[in-house]
Image (cartoon, rainbow, N blue to C red; front, side, top):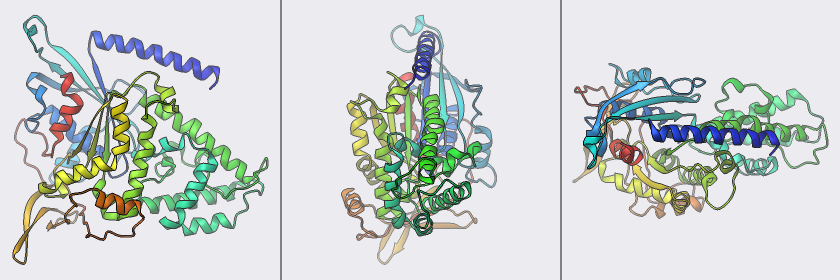
Length: 466
């Protein structure tokens, strides 16, 4: 770390201290980070959360809602960030032909402000106060890059090669093996390797795997085509000066320095509360290998917050600490309510190590099975003399179907142990999911969109500050 880095860090801490004093004395701000891997439902979560905080008729578990006299949207506080497109996303979800909104493609922010009545014995002596909720949304693919920051190019490349054969990466393996890493760097060769590796990552993501890093290869944004995104793993080599291997390593280091580090420095430095959304059901449906990959990926990501050591992220955020972390298993509406407790237990077991670290560091944590927007109703399907608990919903093509997704085990170890041992499929049964479309809504005045336990999530994240 150079003098410029130290000066930059000191300046940010002084600015942060001034902002904290101002906020605590006048209008406190809750900064909520919404993270999660692809398909976990970040955009839907934020849209439904905001809609249900504006119209709180379906939020009974949010105990502070009785003190909220008004809730309104304001311009986001950071003039350099785009505003989260709440209105257009809500229109997608609640129109005559509702559709899921487009996923997150860039960082965005939204500020929701509350006018809150005082409480307690001295409530009559105090006036109304304003509390701001700043929500920061960013692509889940970029979250994967947390795991790269403390890995060298060689460590990352070796891990990538170990996964290639198991994830359908034969085409890239063949290209890498016929390429001499010690040859002089040639840009067309580097570009061909990067494109082939990107195609492999896209295929692995489509197959249900979670750790498809580097994340910007999947969502490059304005960095597409830059040298920092034109590298790929190569076998071990001498890597002399000017060689292809040396240039790949240099670009990998530039990717971490110029893209990953500034992103987390600028957007993580003042997070107070954190939501980690996880699509556990899709991983279970994809099989043991995908579930184990999800477990390892989440452990790597959340390991950056581990107590007792000076990680790179700790050096960026200084003494600031995330106070509360919600681990949310999404798409609970794909299961009958009788299965929700088991889904929560699987979520807790999946993230046990990361949750224990957060608890030890002093953060309050909670795991919930939620559906930010309920797209199904419950039903029963006859099977012989029995009735199976099912869910009914609308498919993207307009058909209404009822689905029995299978019964999750009472003991999460039945899934996690099979995943750790590298089983190719589940021995106890098959687990199915459907890609349900949003259901047409007819909302009463004062009601937000239907959900499952979004009010409990909001209570945990915000209730103590309202």
